[in-house]
Length: 321
Ligand SMILES: NC(=O)c1ccc[n+]([C@@H]2O[C@H](COP(=O)([O-])OP(=O)(O)OC[C@H]3O[C@@H](n4cnc5c(N)ncnc54)[C@H](OP(=O)(O)O)[C@@H]3O)[C@@H](O)[C@H]2O)c1
Image (cartoon, rainbow, N blue to C red; front, side):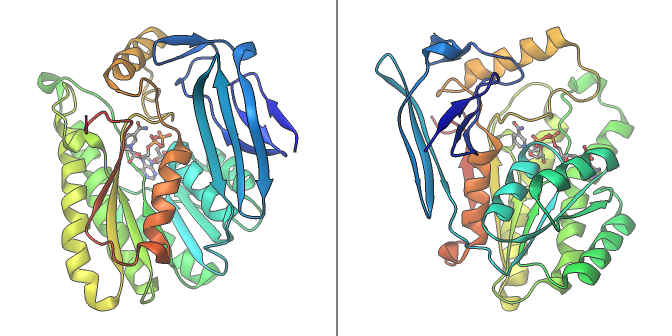
């Protein structure tokens, strides 16, 4: 099985992308555990594929850099998966993982252009819906389209969110309301409007954040919305128990995405913020959307049938060590 690398540090085995560059926004070399690793220094000691597994083990001078396996079992064959904010970052990674495991996928987002590009990347038949997660009427309209085209939702990943860091003194009412509308009100009403389409045995994952647990400067509003999301996973679980619908939360640590690069941040500031965050992660690198996808798919698959109202933290140890 052929293994190849591209210039941005992605590894493919037999044409399937399985390992992504771990450093955010930059190009190689990247740092891991205080070592600098250039592209040519990577070797792949083992790679291969079976009907259910594609893997590679990456080594650098005896140090194992990573081993990434992609379960390509068809756990979601015949199922419908919906991902809000599925046109970028974590949401896009999760939508692709659902498609890889056989689901029919619908994504939402605000940006029509990236919705179209993402739908192509996810695969044939992907339903892409322009819908603002902060507006209840648009959430309702999106659910109507999903009902008309796909008829049901078996797995719902409520992911759309914004995370602009703003100093406490500089928070305006407009910024406060916009963040709460998208990250908290939007989450609640997405679940409420989706429920009529969700059968007994279906499952929901809410995307929270480790910022719900950390006291990082500039994150008062963001952190509060994410703490609310973790609480909603519990209270909604209780409300939806009798319908046989499970709700759980996932809390990512720093993950490669467009989140920090939005809203016209300068390259310099972006690099500074990225380096500062990376220095706080015990494992010394950012995670990838695929790290989160593994958790989301688990929490919406039958194998997690006994898990509800829980929070799964995936953060390289940033909030746990
Ligand atoms: N990356 C991290 O380190 C990290 C860590 C913890 C939690 N999270 C959470 O992960 C989620 C996804 O973020 P990301 O890191 O993947 O960042 P991202 O690449 O910026 O993606 C954000 C997604 O949310 C969508 N979105 C934002 N506002 C929306 C709105 N009003 N209506 C509809 N869609 C909207 C965006 O769509 P448009 O582009 O069309 O607006 C985009 O698809 C967020 O909830 C974030 O809080 C991320």
